[in-house]
Picture (tube, rainbow, N blue to C red):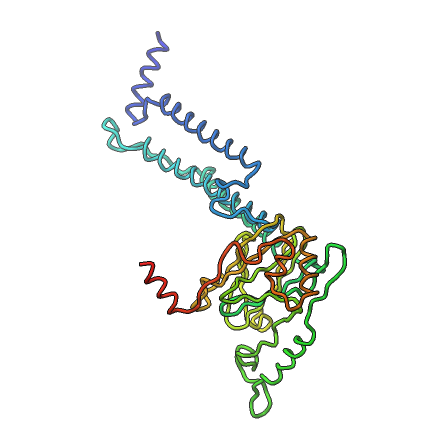
Length: 372
Protein backbone atom coordinates (compact mmCIF):
# COMPACT_ATOMS: atom_id res chain seq x y z
CA UNK A 1 0.00 0.00 0.00
CA UNK A 2 2.80 2.36 0.87
CA UNK A 3 4.51 1.63 -2.46
CA UNK A 4 1.30 2.36 -4.41
CA UNK A 5 0.89 5.72 -2.65
CA UNK A 6 4.50 6.60 -3.39
CA UNK A 7 4.04 5.84 -7.08
CA UNK A 8 0.87 7.97 -7.15
CA UNK A 9 2.69 10.90 -5.55
CA UNK A 10 5.60 10.54 -8.00
CA UNK A 11 3.17 10.44 -10.90
CA UNK A 12 1.44 13.66 -9.79
CA UNK A 13 4.80 15.33 -9.26
CA UNK A 14 5.92 14.45 -12.74
CA UNK A 15 2.73 15.96 -14.19
CA UNK A 16 3.32 19.12 -12.16
CA UNK A 17 6.74 19.71 -13.72
CA UNK A 18 5.54 19.06 -17.26
CA UNK A 19 6.72 15.48 -17.76
CA UNK A 20 4.54 13.24 -19.96
CA UNK A 21 2.93 10.10 -18.52
CA UNK A 22 2.78 8.36 -21.91
CA UNK A 23 6.40 7.23 -21.86
CA UNK A 24 5.43 3.61 -22.47
CA UNK A 25 3.42 4.40 -25.61
CA UNK A 26 6.16 6.69 -26.92
CA UNK A 27 8.77 4.03 -26.28
CA UNK A 28 6.78 1.46 -28.22
CA UNK A 29 6.45 3.83 -31.16
CA UNK A 30 10.16 4.58 -31.15
CA UNK A 31 11.07 0.91 -30.88
CA UNK A 32 8.81 0.04 -33.81
CA UNK A 33 10.20 2.89 -35.90
CA UNK A 34 13.74 1.83 -35.04
CA UNK A 35 12.95 -1.76 -35.94
CA UNK A 36 11.50 -0.68 -39.30
CA UNK A 37 14.56 1.46 -40.10
CA UNK A 38 16.91 -1.34 -39.02
CA UNK A 39 15.11 -3.89 -41.18
CA UNK A 40 15.17 -1.49 -44.13
CA UNK A 41 18.89 -0.80 -43.75
CA UNK A 42 19.59 -4.52 -43.30
CA UNK A 43 17.70 -5.33 -46.50
CA UNK A 44 19.61 -2.61 -48.32
CA UNK A 45 22.96 -3.88 -47.06
CA UNK A 46 22.08 -7.47 -47.97
CA UNK A 47 21.15 -6.36 -51.47
CA UNK A 48 24.42 -4.41 -51.44
CA UNK A 49 26.26 -7.71 -51.85
CA UNK A 50 25.60 -6.96 -55.53
CA UNK A 51 25.12 -3.23 -55.82
CA UNK A 52 25.10 -3.21 -59.61
CA UNK A 53 21.35 -2.88 -60.02
CA UNK A 54 19.13 -0.11 -61.28
CA UNK A 55 17.95 0.88 -57.78
CA UNK A 56 21.39 1.25 -56.23
CA UNK A 57 23.06 2.93 -59.23
CA UNK A 58 20.88 6.02 -58.61
CA UNK A 59 20.72 6.97 -62.29
CA UNK A 60 24.25 6.02 -63.32
CA UNK A 61 25.03 3.51 -66.08
CA UNK A 62 26.47 0.16 -65.04
CA UNK A 63 29.89 0.81 -66.61
CA UNK A 64 32.09 -1.42 -68.76
CA UNK A 65 35.56 -0.82 -67.29
CA UNK A 66 37.11 -1.49 -63.86
CA UNK A 67 37.52 2.28 -63.43
CA UNK A 68 33.81 2.76 -64.10
CA UNK A 69 32.96 0.07 -61.55
CA UNK A 70 35.06 1.78 -58.87
CA UNK A 71 33.43 5.15 -59.55
CA UNK A 72 29.93 3.68 -59.56
CA UNK A 73 30.54 1.89 -56.26
CA UNK A 74 31.90 5.13 -54.73
CA UNK A 75 28.79 6.95 -55.97
CA UNK A 76 26.45 4.27 -54.60
CA UNK A 77 27.99 4.15 -51.12
CA UNK A 78 28.23 7.95 -50.96
CA UNK A 79 24.52 8.27 -51.74
CA UNK A 80 23.65 5.54 -49.22
CA UNK A 81 25.71 7.32 -46.55
CA UNK A 82 23.98 10.61 -47.39
CA UNK A 83 20.56 8.93 -47.25
CA UNK A 84 21.36 7.30 -43.90
CA UNK A 85 22.38 10.66 -42.43
CA UNK A 86 19.33 12.26 -44.01
CA UNK A 87 16.99 9.67 -42.47
CA UNK A 88 18.64 10.20 -39.08
CA UNK A 89 18.35 13.99 -39.27
CA UNK A 90 14.80 13.90 -40.66
CA UNK A 91 13.81 11.36 -38.00
CA UNK A 92 15.18 13.47 -35.17
CA UNK A 93 13.58 16.59 -36.63
CA UNK A 94 10.11 15.06 -36.96
CA UNK A 95 10.46 13.30 -33.60
CA UNK A 96 11.11 16.68 -32.00
CA UNK A 97 8.18 18.27 -33.82
CA UNK A 98 5.72 15.48 -32.96
CA UNK A 99 6.64 14.55 -29.39
CA UNK A 100 7.61 17.99 -28.11
CA UNK A 101 4.73 19.99 -29.50
CA UNK A 102 2.61 22.02 -27.11
CA UNK A 103 -0.41 20.14 -25.79
CA UNK A 104 -3.58 21.40 -24.05
CA UNK A 105 -2.40 20.19 -20.65
CA UNK A 106 1.20 21.35 -21.09
CA UNK A 107 2.58 23.77 -18.51
CA UNK A 108 2.92 27.39 -19.50
CA UNK A 109 6.69 27.23 -19.20
CA UNK A 110 8.14 23.94 -20.61
CA UNK A 111 10.84 22.01 -18.87
CA UNK A 112 14.30 23.34 -19.71
CA UNK A 113 17.34 21.18 -20.44
CA UNK A 114 20.93 22.29 -19.99
CA UNK A 115 23.95 21.68 -22.15
CA UNK A 116 25.08 18.13 -22.86
CA UNK A 117 28.80 18.40 -23.60
CA UNK A 118 29.38 14.73 -24.55
CA UNK A 119 26.42 14.81 -26.94
CA UNK A 120 27.50 18.08 -28.54
CA UNK A 121 31.06 16.82 -28.97
CA UNK A 122 29.70 13.67 -30.59
CA UNK A 123 27.53 15.36 -33.17
CA UNK A 124 30.38 17.75 -33.94
CA UNK A 125 33.00 15.02 -34.35
CA UNK A 126 30.89 12.47 -36.24
CA UNK A 127 30.40 14.67 -39.37
CA UNK A 128 34.16 15.23 -39.56
CA UNK A 129 34.73 11.48 -39.36
CA UNK A 130 32.20 10.91 -42.15
CA UNK A 131 33.85 13.57 -44.32
CA UNK A 132 37.30 12.07 -43.69
CA UNK A 133 36.09 8.59 -44.69
CA UNK A 134 34.44 9.88 -47.88
CA UNK A 135 37.54 11.93 -48.71
CA UNK A 136 39.78 8.89 -48.25
CA UNK A 137 37.77 6.66 -50.58
CA UNK A 138 37.41 9.50 -53.11
CA UNK A 139 41.20 9.91 -53.27
CA UNK A 140 41.70 6.14 -53.59
CA UNK A 141 39.26 5.90 -56.50
CA UNK A 142 40.60 9.07 -58.15
CA UNK A 143 44.17 7.76 -58.03
CA UNK A 144 43.01 4.45 -59.51
CA UNK A 145 41.19 6.21 -62.36
CA UNK A 146 44.23 8.40 -63.17
CA UNK A 147 46.78 5.58 -62.89
CA UNK A 148 48.79 4.85 -66.07
CA UNK A 149 50.93 1.86 -67.01
CA UNK A 150 54.10 2.15 -69.06
CA UNK A 151 53.22 -0.08 -72.01
CA UNK A 152 49.51 -0.16 -72.83
CA UNK A 153 48.24 -2.79 -75.26
CA UNK A 154 46.52 -0.24 -77.50
CA UNK A 155 47.30 3.47 -77.90
CA UNK A 156 44.63 5.55 -79.64
CA UNK A 157 45.05 9.10 -80.92
CA UNK A 158 41.80 11.05 -80.49
CA UNK A 159 41.44 14.30 -82.44
CA UNK A 160 38.35 16.43 -81.91
CA UNK A 161 37.30 19.11 -84.37
CA UNK A 162 34.15 21.05 -85.15
CA UNK A 163 31.99 18.97 -85.20
CA UNK A 164 33.31 15.45 -85.38
CA UNK A 165 36.10 13.07 -84.39
CA UNK A 166 39.15 11.39 -85.87
CA UNK A 167 40.62 8.23 -84.32
CA UNK A 168 43.98 6.66 -85.13
CA UNK A 169 45.85 3.59 -83.89
CA UNK A 170 49.29 4.72 -82.74
CA UNK A 171 50.34 1.33 -81.35
CA UNK A 172 48.64 -2.05 -81.04
CA UNK A 173 49.75 -5.26 -79.35
CA UNK A 174 47.97 -7.94 -81.35
CA UNK A 175 46.23 -11.00 -79.92
CA UNK A 176 49.14 -13.15 -81.15
CA UNK A 177 51.69 -10.95 -79.35
CA UNK A 178 52.98 -9.08 -82.41
CA UNK A 179 53.25 -5.29 -82.22
CA UNK A 180 51.85 -2.92 -84.83
CA UNK A 181 53.37 0.57 -84.98
CA UNK A 182 50.79 2.76 -86.67
CA UNK A 183 52.43 6.21 -86.59
CA UNK A 184 52.43 7.87 -90.02
CA UNK A 185 56.01 9.12 -89.89
CA UNK A 186 55.82 11.05 -93.16
CA UNK A 187 52.70 13.05 -92.29
CA UNK A 188 53.89 13.49 -88.71
CA UNK A 189 57.18 15.05 -89.84
CA UNK A 190 55.44 17.20 -92.43
CA UNK A 191 53.05 18.48 -89.78
CA UNK A 192 55.83 19.22 -87.29
CA UNK A 193 57.87 21.02 -89.96
CA UNK A 194 55.05 23.50 -90.45
CA UNK A 195 55.55 24.76 -86.89
CA UNK A 196 58.35 27.15 -87.88
CA UNK A 197 56.25 28.67 -90.65
CA UNK A 198 53.54 29.49 -88.11
CA UNK A 199 55.84 31.27 -85.69
CA UNK A 200 55.11 34.94 -85.22
CA UNK A 201 58.03 36.94 -83.90
CA UNK A 202 58.66 40.51 -82.95
CA UNK A 203 61.08 42.71 -84.86
CA UNK A 204 63.91 41.73 -82.53
CA UNK A 205 63.23 38.00 -83.07
CA UNK A 206 61.45 37.16 -79.83
CA UNK A 207 58.22 35.09 -79.85
CA UNK A 208 55.06 37.11 -79.77
CA UNK A 209 53.34 37.15 -76.37
CA UNK A 210 50.12 35.23 -76.27
CA UNK A 211 48.38 32.05 -75.11
CA UNK A 212 50.43 29.79 -77.42
CA UNK A 213 53.88 31.32 -76.84
CA UNK A 214 53.93 33.09 -80.18
CA UNK A 215 52.12 30.39 -82.17
CA UNK A 216 48.95 31.51 -83.94
CA UNK A 217 45.61 29.76 -83.59
CA UNK A 218 46.03 27.86 -86.87
CA UNK A 219 49.10 25.97 -85.62
CA UNK A 220 48.19 22.27 -85.42
CA UNK A 221 51.71 20.87 -85.33
CA UNK A 222 50.89 19.16 -82.02
CA UNK A 223 48.37 16.79 -83.63
CA UNK A 224 49.23 13.13 -84.23
CA UNK A 225 48.74 11.24 -87.49
CA UNK A 226 48.47 7.49 -87.98
CA UNK A 227 48.37 5.05 -90.87
CA UNK A 228 45.01 3.62 -89.81
CA UNK A 229 42.52 6.37 -89.07
CA UNK A 230 38.75 6.67 -88.83
CA UNK A 231 37.31 10.12 -89.47
CA UNK A 232 33.68 11.06 -89.00
CA UNK A 233 31.57 13.25 -91.24
CA UNK A 234 28.01 14.51 -91.38
CA UNK A 235 27.14 11.33 -93.30
CA UNK A 236 29.01 8.85 -91.12
CA UNK A 237 29.36 8.48 -87.36
CA UNK A 238 32.97 7.47 -86.61
CA UNK A 239 33.19 4.00 -85.05
CA UNK A 240 36.26 3.38 -82.89
CA UNK A 241 36.92 -0.37 -82.78
CA UNK A 242 38.62 -1.56 -79.58
CA UNK A 243 39.43 -4.98 -78.09
CA UNK A 244 38.01 -6.29 -74.84
CA UNK A 245 40.30 -7.34 -72.02
CA UNK A 246 43.19 -5.06 -73.07
CA UNK A 247 44.75 -1.97 -71.48
CA UNK A 248 43.92 1.00 -73.70
CA UNK A 249 45.45 4.48 -73.69
CA UNK A 250 43.72 7.53 -75.17
CA UNK A 251 45.78 10.58 -76.23
CA UNK A 252 43.48 13.56 -76.72
CA UNK A 253 43.93 16.78 -78.70
CA UNK A 254 41.59 19.31 -80.31
CA UNK A 255 42.21 20.90 -83.68
CA UNK A 256 40.25 24.08 -82.94
CA UNK A 257 38.25 24.81 -79.76
CA UNK A 258 37.84 22.95 -76.47
CA UNK A 259 35.85 19.73 -76.74
CA UNK A 260 35.22 16.91 -74.26
CA UNK A 261 35.60 13.14 -74.77
CA UNK A 262 32.74 11.42 -72.97
CA UNK A 263 31.65 7.80 -73.09
CA UNK A 264 28.74 7.40 -70.63
CA UNK A 265 29.53 3.70 -70.08
CA UNK A 266 33.07 4.70 -69.02
CA UNK A 267 31.47 6.94 -66.34
CA UNK A 268 34.24 9.36 -67.23
CA UNK A 269 34.92 12.34 -69.42
CA UNK A 270 38.03 14.37 -70.17
CA UNK A 271 38.33 17.81 -71.74
CA UNK A 272 40.04 17.80 -75.14
CA UNK A 273 42.22 20.88 -75.44
CA UNK A 274 44.05 22.46 -78.36
CA UNK A 275 47.78 22.69 -77.66
CA UNK A 276 47.58 20.40 -74.60
CA UNK A 277 51.19 21.03 -73.57
CA UNK A 278 50.90 24.82 -73.69
CA UNK A 279 47.60 24.61 -71.82
CA UNK A 280 49.10 22.40 -69.08
CA UNK A 281 46.49 19.76 -69.84
CA UNK A 282 46.86 16.09 -68.92
CA UNK A 283 45.56 14.82 -72.24
CA UNK A 284 46.29 11.12 -71.65
CA UNK A 285 44.15 8.61 -69.77
CA UNK A 286 43.93 4.83 -69.69
CA UNK A 287 41.36 2.16 -69.01
CA UNK A 288 42.45 -1.21 -67.64
CA UNK A 289 40.11 -3.10 -69.98
CA UNK A 290 36.70 -3.12 -71.60
CA UNK A 291 34.79 -5.90 -69.90
CA UNK A 292 32.19 -6.78 -72.52
CA UNK A 293 31.58 -6.57 -76.24
CA UNK A 294 29.00 -4.25 -77.74
CA UNK A 295 28.34 -0.78 -79.14
CA UNK A 296 28.57 2.19 -76.76
CA UNK A 297 27.78 5.77 -77.71
CA UNK A 298 30.28 8.56 -77.12
CA UNK A 299 29.64 12.30 -77.13
CA UNK A 300 31.24 15.71 -76.93
CA UNK A 301 30.38 17.07 -73.49
CA UNK A 302 31.70 20.62 -73.94
CA UNK A 303 29.68 23.28 -75.77
CA UNK A 304 31.71 23.82 -78.94
CA UNK A 305 29.44 25.54 -81.43
CA UNK A 306 26.46 25.06 -83.70
CA UNK A 307 26.41 21.27 -84.04
CA UNK A 308 27.88 20.41 -80.64
CA UNK A 309 24.88 18.30 -79.63
CA UNK A 310 25.34 16.07 -82.68
CA UNK A 311 29.09 15.51 -82.26
CA UNK A 312 28.77 11.81 -81.46
CA UNK A 313 30.87 8.71 -82.01
CA UNK A 314 30.69 5.04 -81.13
CA UNK A 315 32.95 2.63 -79.27
CA UNK A 316 32.65 -0.84 -80.82
CA UNK A 317 34.15 -3.37 -78.41
CA UNK A 318 35.05 -6.71 -80.02
CA UNK A 319 37.09 -9.75 -79.00
CA UNK A 320 40.91 -9.50 -79.33
CA UNK A 321 40.81 -12.02 -82.19
CA UNK A 322 38.25 -9.96 -84.12
CA UNK A 323 40.21 -6.80 -83.38
CA UNK A 324 43.37 -8.32 -84.88
CA UNK A 325 41.40 -9.31 -87.99
CA UNK A 326 40.08 -5.74 -88.21
CA UNK A 327 43.57 -4.20 -87.98
CA UNK A 328 44.96 -6.69 -90.51
CA UNK A 329 42.16 -5.80 -92.94
CA UNK A 330 42.84 -2.07 -92.54
CA UNK A 331 46.57 -2.68 -93.11
CA UNK A 332 46.03 -4.82 -96.20
CA UNK A 333 43.31 -2.57 -97.66
CA UNK A 334 44.43 1.03 -96.97
CA UNK A 335 41.76 2.46 -99.28
CA UNK A 336 38.91 0.48 -97.72
CA UNK A 337 36.39 2.28 -95.53
CA UNK A 338 35.93 1.64 -91.84
CA UNK A 339 32.51 0.18 -92.63
CA UNK A 340 34.05 -2.37 -94.98
CA UNK A 341 36.58 -3.35 -92.32
CA UNK A 342 33.78 -3.80 -89.78
CA UNK A 343 31.77 -5.88 -92.22
CA UNK A 344 34.80 -8.11 -92.80
CA UNK A 345 34.70 -9.24 -89.15
CA UNK A 346 30.94 -9.70 -89.05
CA UNK A 347 30.10 -6.37 -87.38
CA UNK A 348 27.58 -3.73 -88.41
CA UNK A 349 29.34 -1.35 -90.84
CA UNK A 350 27.58 1.68 -89.35
CA UNK A 351 27.03 2.97 -85.83
CA UNK A 352 24.15 1.31 -84.00
CA UNK A 353 24.09 3.46 -80.85
CA UNK A 354 23.61 6.82 -82.61
CA UNK A 355 23.07 8.18 -86.12
CA UNK A 356 24.44 10.92 -88.42
CA UNK A 357 22.89 14.36 -88.72
CA UNK A 358 22.09 16.70 -91.58
CA UNK A 359 24.26 19.82 -91.49
CA UNK A 360 22.11 21.65 -94.03
CA UNK A 361 20.13 24.08 -91.89
CA UNK A 362 17.62 24.78 -94.66
CA UNK A 363 16.93 21.06 -95.15
CA UNK A 364 16.57 20.52 -91.43
CA UNK A 365 14.22 23.49 -91.22
CA UNK A 366 12.07 22.02 -93.98
CA UNK A 367 11.99 18.67 -92.16
CA UNK A 368 10.73 20.40 -89.02
CA UNK A 369 8.13 22.31 -91.02
CA UNK A 370 6.89 19.09 -92.66
CA UNK A 371 6.68 17.42 -89.26
CA UNK A 372 4.34 20.17 -88.06
